Image (cartoon, rainbow, N blue to C red; front, side, top):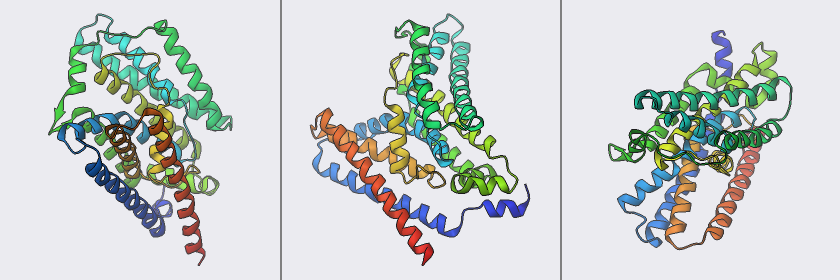
Length: 334
């Protein structure tokens, strides 16, 4: 790829300004929501509760990071909730197989990430090379992966995972939950890939105008499949984190997780049509959802009411995103 081509793929100053403003907007909303709960939710501002929030948003943050890559190229992955269960039960089976503890954990982690990446590859390959909407393919995979997880375990939960794994699930690093630190490292890595590499520029370019990228001589299919593989690999990582936190591997894990991940990405400013969004916005979106859920719980709001409020927040975020996009188009035209 020539230097001229790389320059053409670099986001424009208007696009960068729009992304920064979007991140600033969600950041202001997060600060305002946090201030509200500090005033009206008892115990919200305690150190323990803040750590609990970090722990609670870890899984969604990891899944949403991978979902960001998929959405940026105009795709969607509805299978992540079921795939995390499949990754967890396969990994849990290996970890309780009687192998030496170190080898069992290492092999279990590798298998979890590998299975997630393989499922992501299958989703991306079928979507791209058979020109089938990713919505349909990943919906089918949602059922297939869930059935495979239940078949492998006969519907039973796997217990007695290695203590070393569960100790990591409750450990802290520099005062932060260790699992949340892993999520932050993934966010940092994803930010670097999307903002500092040619691959990242290709991801944005394909989401904005895939045909133009293809006509310029680039193989867009490989990049799109790679984004699904990245998304699948993050699901595998989330599966390991889940087992470390709760000490079990369950075939019924993950129901609705895909919707939470998509919500975090959309609230973070990404467009479901592709080409716009950032992993920093995704992190802020996941934090907003976590703070909202935790704060409402501390205020005594029921599960049903919390679900209604969360759904309303997502709808408002989508409407504001559409409004911001139209305003941006008007400014560009003017």
